[in-house]
Length: 251
Image (cartoon, rainbow, N blue to C red):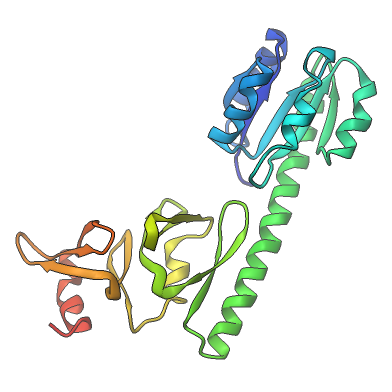
């Protein structure tokens, strides 16, 4: 089960206290990365953290939050609405909320809502990964080494392999550094892409890096090998991979 990140939008200290206490008691499943009481600042907070879940406390004072939600220009998080007025439940339902909780909050309701959010996120991720696998299998079957399907945080993207400068492992994620200063963070680990990327041009120079030799501009031999790339980056070649690397690029 994955840990979800969450932010709280609410102007009541008691709600924040209960939610933070709940997160402290359940650190393996939820991490509160921020909270905001101001309606005007709430959208900036969501855009900054791009959380998995947003807890929103709704009242007459901040009904405009419903409009803010519709302005999100990225894949929206899962919403759990909180209110002492259950008449807002219908609006929450129309916005495809995961749940609607009535104040004052209690732990049992919170844990059920969080598990609903986790289940929905895992189902969507599973579906997304299956689509990515299907695309990459078809590419392999038809020997199409031109594109690779990448499952990013909020969508599936088809990336032209020639546009990839290098890939960097970031924990269980992979960061694709592309031409035109673009980068995409994939929700899959680097090892999964090693088997997909064109083996004629991509080489794993380091535990953390797979590079596209088409974008190498210079190889330095000072104090070990390092490669410079078209985007200005410089990456080291691990000592244990140097001999294999020189054979790969036919030095």
